[in-house]
Image (tube, rainbow, N blue to C red):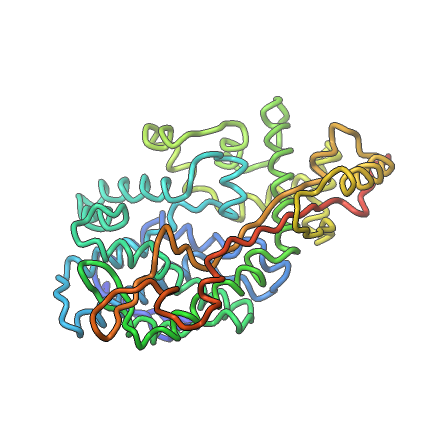
Length: 410
């Protein structure tokens, strides 16, 4: 069987699957599940075109990895075929641990279990199934492989993951300000002292990349309407979980029902093979089918929130610079009480939160620029644009959202 396949991608054109191992990974059910998980979750409530999946993104990241490795080889760096294949495998699988709606599911159904940790468990399980062919890929993913720059290409502030999701999310949302020149960025990468660096002539490209990331966060990932929709889905899941754990029988697929009723730790994933199967059975369809079914449930909180989200009757949301105090919350609480919502039901219809955004984490994970004299400088020091330093500052915005036109009066 010919396993060297070409995939037509709307962002890059043709993507090549260049080895049998990569083909087998793409064909595996763990990876095929990513077809059924949207990359941007609920973002299509704001940007109708944001319907691309994590399957698209993972293939795109693999493509950028192959291009970056070729560029580094052309600059004289020795990269073995097994290393190249392993790096592509690692970036291909880097999102396996994402559940439906990603962070929403994590925070409610699997608190304390990060998707990166689940990814690693799934990669190790795949490695067993493939007789150790992913040993090197797992080391690169974890950061234990001796040549550290491979891990930086998988997970850093200038990795193939970020390059693809910025370019792809910009493309599908139509937010052109987030578009980056990934081809040029890749050509500007180099290796110095076993770490990934950027050539000095790539300064402008990096600056554009950081600005694009900041804009995409405010315009897409942290858009207030999206935050409102996410808050509603979160409250729906909290309510479903509360009812389910109190013995209420809810409409849900068997795998989804399992996660509604129980709380699992990372150790459970490592010890229970069936739990991995159940997790792999979860995708966006489970959640949407359940939300549709819950619109006719007898619990007024669950049914009202589910119908509102399906019909895009979203909570009103307001941003502020400081945490909302009683001066703000008390009138909202009073209005909700007048609409028939009880004190016990109030947390489901009045939600507060905080968002943070900083485009460049200078202290934790610096981007190093290799100057013409060979000296390495942090991007913030190498750039003569003062806004780069400003991008390192954390911007915090607090918000409150509430069911403005909700009525639970019978």
